[in-house]
Length: 161
Image (cartoon, rainbow, N blue to C red):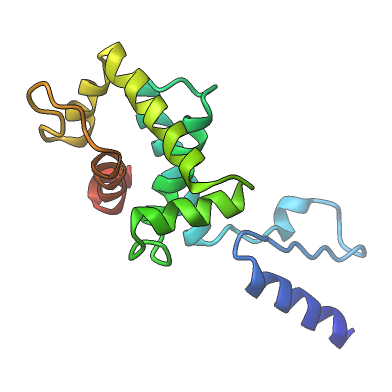
């Protein structure tokens, strides 16, 4: 029995996204009674993911684009404390490994998604969402500006609710 506990402990430490539910078969099958609430970190992560999807949709980036998924991943990585210190090149490299791709391909996909959003004119709606003039004049934002603006928005009070 101790080995089972050791294995479960190791799994939960190795992957923070795992939620382990232990049900005593002798008890009633009302599973909600036995489910542990998700950690605050997981809840925050889910909220951030929902917010990122909402923002990318409002910005006019089609969810069918590969760049949409890459942007979503790199923004969420930028919000995470373990990735927040990395440069864009390192973020792209990490993301490329995760998606079995190259950093150049990641950059190209994200650039295409942002160009499409810029051409649609919906990218300007981010000014309203972020609460300041992120897009000003007729200048297209750099990828890093776009990612860091959304990541910063999620880190401060605006991204919590």
